[in-house]
Image 1 (spheres, rainbow, N blue to C red):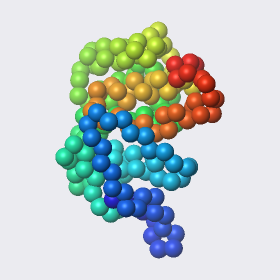
Image 2: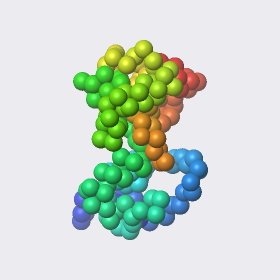
Image 3: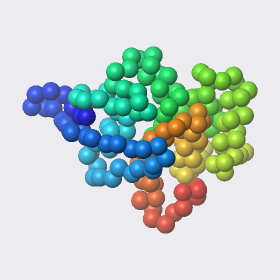
Length: 176
């Protein structure tokens, strides 16, 4: 599988000849220097980008062959994302940020209940009505993780999940 941005002399081969097999229940870390294609690989697996060569099969589904409707369903039910920059919506409360992925498939009441449960597990109960700008970096990270887990996806893709602690070694993930 491969992914190329641009063409001709300006082409950037972000992924070339990737052959990766991951089995259910495995925890896999992709490690490499900045710019080596880690984020691109996650985005291709997650159906946010299409490969330019080869195929990507997740749980028996060819993600590269899916139309936009099938990709939306795949992303909603199969994959949870924790983005490097968190991608929290600044105008939404913490609770609303967590339940966004749930609103298409559940009623508002069950979505709120699930969101509150995830925030409690993330040690953020009482912060439901806070906005992202009012949170520490660690709290934002935990909100992003709760959102990624909202639909209880069988696959959770985390981009640079330890970057915060690589900058400040020894800082536990739950500290603000």
